[in-house]
Image (cartoon, rainbow, N blue to C red):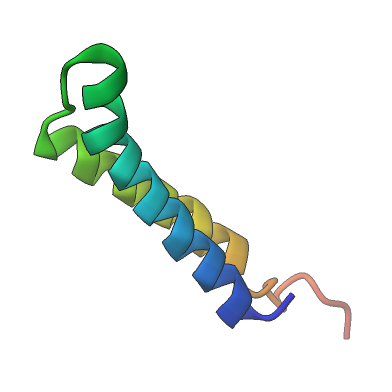
Length: 63
């Protein structure tokens, strides 16, 4: 899968997560996660996406 498609999926996951913790939690539980928790969630998803889109290292390749 090309990296552009992977980053599109990651971006859509981040958008969905932000909408869930702002509007979804308000509708379901009558509270909203604060901005700090939302930023932490975004960075966690970004970190997972960064690891997913990295190219495999060439250090272990045999010559």
